[in-house]
Amino acid sequence: MGCFECHSKNVIRYGFYKTYWKWLCKDCGGQFSERSFSFFCRCRFPEYVIRNTILYTHFVSTRYAVFLAKETMRIVFSRQTAYAWAKKFACQVSRLVKKLDFSNVWHVDEKFVRARNKKDKNGNVKFSYLWVVSDDKNNVIAVHVSHNRDIVNAKKVLGKALKRANKPPDIIVSDGLPAYKRACQHVFGRKTKPAVRHFETKAVTHQRKVYYLSNNRIESLNSKINLWYKKFRGFKNLETARLWCESFAYFYNFMRPRTIEHKIESIKLIIKQ
Image 1 (tube, helix red, strand yellow):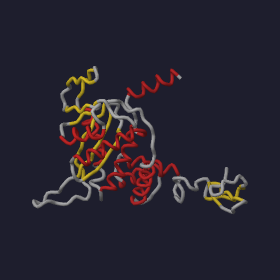
Image 2 (image 1 turned 90 degrees about the vertical axis):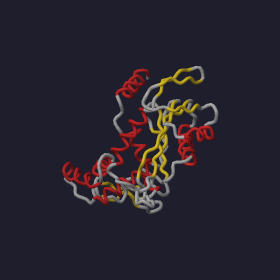
Image 3 (image 1 turned 45 degrees about the vertical axis):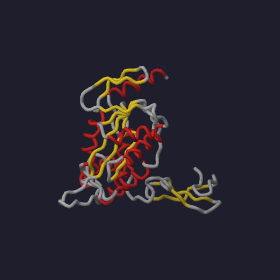
Image 4 (image 1 turned 90 degrees about the horizontal axis):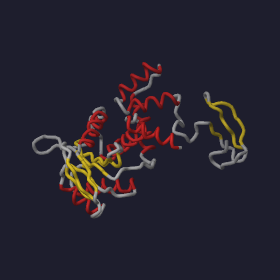
């Protein structure tokens, strides 16, 4: 083990910190433990408690996460602590960049969310919009939260998707919002064909290929987002909403149980190797 400050290998054991070894660098005099500069640094609870609590918060509210931790691990802490752990994890994963092999057919849609919304003249709460871009392999490519549903924000979410995938799609399927067609031409160019589809599957011809498309896939994703969003009951502001939505996209792509189709593909890759 080397020193975290001067990267020297001249270190010795220097006692214990709880159940972790402490180390002393003879060159710079710095002290550190096995948890220093890690995600669990300055946390007095064991690692398994923090990991399980963060996993609980992806499915239930912080109050129920505290209840589950008390019943399963016999550990008591406040819901503010659970929220701080989940937010710290969300900040970490929002900066991570993992590559995925996105397909050439994308689906885009938007849904209503609350993010510090004001009321109109009639006393009704104005909703914000969560923009979601996914492919036909059930992978979330990009998310974006805005107060308005216009071409400016459509360009932003499609620009995020293009930056993440590093390639434009062949076809992008939407529910018919006029902003998508103009934003698609501005971000992707003429090679990407916008298609309007709802629940009925229809054929689309593009580059001498026939695609049978519907918008059911993104609607199914919206139902999963509703289950996840229900525990929040709204967001404080747009930045907080975007942070939690980025965390959900990471969880949906890399942490949740995959479908049978994805498992079969992974088994085939292992057999080929």
